[in-house]
Image (cartoon, rainbow, N blue to C red; front, side, top):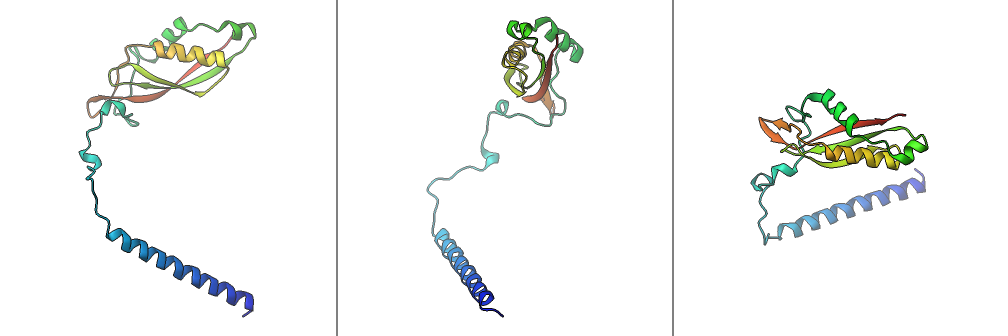
Length: 154
């Protein structure tokens, strides 16, 4: 064996033994700690269920009248931004919207943007949508997320 290998093996042995000693001393010091405050387990904490987003609802949120009615409503309320119209800017904005357990659109995030004016108009229209039928989980209304694409085309 070369001297280089012997030194490397010895160095590895020292590092391993040192790490083990640190682990044992840390473990011993942890045994001496006593809690001053009792923290309830997660199942004991009663969080406001309306703030949690259900990612896999039994039934997703739905716009009254379905997707066709939603697209008609968007088309009727969408205003092409003047600057985008003058500059012939087109694009598709994809929004992620949160629908509360009461059927209101609470949060709107742009997850795929086009142009700032188009993004702003898409967000404005999405926030204006009312009367959603909330998603359900185990028969109870829950907060849900969904993606909403809005296309601006001249």
